[in-house]
Length: 125
Image (spheres, rainbow, N blue to C red):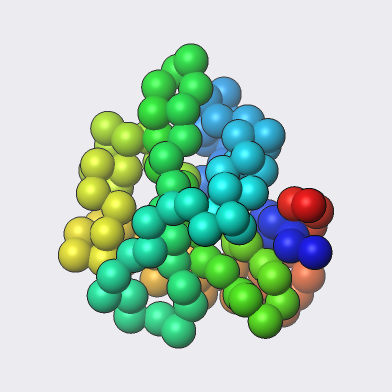
């Protein structure tokens, strides 16, 4: 069974500001697609995580989500959510310094959230 793990960091810093554009159901739907191998593996990843990006659509416009996968535990953990036309959403790659800096900062905070169990877990099956 695969699970979507929404951390406090992701919810507060990424999801809440864009909740009017991208619902939790959109996040779950994208995570199910990622679970099934649909998404783009981000190259030049400086971490030990597998990072996948996927496109989201809504009536308010397009966006992108970047998730990390923990295969051994069957977890999908969103790290960044952005509108497609902002500086991070335009170029969601590790070659984009703004994306890289935000990804590394969020990963550090997400790891702390995981250790302190500040998470919400959703079944993706």
